[in-house]
Length: 496
Image: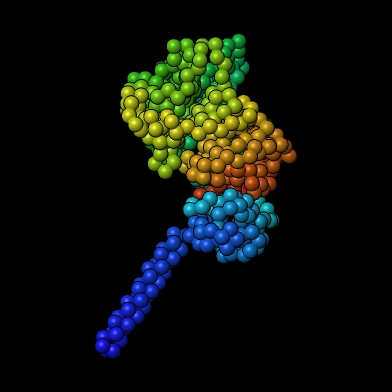
């Protein structure tokens, strides 16, 4: 009897111990899983909450990251952080500090990987002096430059190859006046502008505006090849009608979309001297995204419309239609793509409407279409929007007027406060996260998409281009010096 009681007690004891051990193991696994998913106990609020992951990087790397004044790690790094508002700073010896305050949401990933550390000491080098330069533009990636000007009555193209920092190369080519429309300086006024480079940085579109005495201005479009600069193709002559606008398609300098006088948009093959049937009609202006998407402003049945068309569509999808022919709305439209989702931004007067999803042709009436049209996010600017721009990867949307701008971050779904500008100046993207402009003092100023981390870099001439080198180590811009223009290169690192 005693033996049976002892055995029963031993069984109960072992069962209890094993149960406790099992529960402890399960609890430990749960805690570890919760920890891996970023959860922790907040002793201040006495509740369990999910942390957020923040990734940090800078250019150059090696900057000291601090969070709310507490030193963390050197870039490139990452770490978990409790939700809420935090101040992030990055410091690197010889560089101006970087700082940003963000409201971090629980369970999110925040990418602070775009901090550009600016040297405290600005060092620039003059590369080339131009006595006459009407227009200049850098190729994508900042590897090449094309400019145009008239010297002693002869129009010239100026080429710059700045791929080699130690041995940049500069050449110039006369533009044959034999093929320039009505090139008579005595009776006709002429203006030249570099319209754009193709994405590969080989071909250039030149816009020649000529105004005969007593007549309206006309435009002649010419294509030039950097590898064969004496070759000139008259795009206008191929079309046989006046062209109001033209854009290269992708990296192929032989394919363009052109807007003809009368509102037709056609695809042109320069090498084959051929034109497609109209892909759009009633168009007043258009912008091209990639090689297959056009966003445009036009008219349909005498009413202003804004629409988007993709290659292969029979019709465009109208995103805005004026209430009547008398309506005088100020309308802008841009199309892009971010993380495999189409983006269409339409601004009407003082409000931007941002659509995200799967953009389908108007012939479809699917759930995807309804979802896209119902995804609209409205951003009120408070005054008439005069300009709309997106960065190249489609994440950032900037709306502006003459005195300020607002940014909408598609990834974080946040709207910046209104950033005031000290002068009327065009904003241009320097990279994916920084914009640049010319301030009231004539200096090139850069700042991040949300207006933070403002840096004054170098004097810059009005109306001329600027670009970063492909590795981000140099900034190229034009500086005015009396009647001359100087191509200047500014160091963006302290490296020797």
